[in-house]
Image (tube, rainbow, N blue to C red):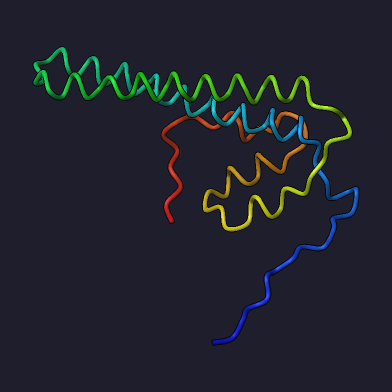
Length: 128
């Protein structure tokens, strides 16, 4: 049995670092967008349920409401971290994004400011 060496990442240059507050704001925007998708699904599911869905199915739809509330809550927390984080906190986000399968998400998280990619409408799917 041979021991494998742990991969260590070299210290990133200051240009490659992202302020934690900015990353937190980007993640908050992603969660808020996901919560909006859940909210839309709740409305659609509610409309479908009016047509005579079984009680069991309707009660399972409450999970969408819970998911939406959780996403909003996490988004609020990350937004507050972004507002209160010290400007000195920085980190390299490349190791965080490595292997993330959603290319548009990677672009938005790497972006500076408010990227236009956040304006993508729900329903535009990425097929892998």
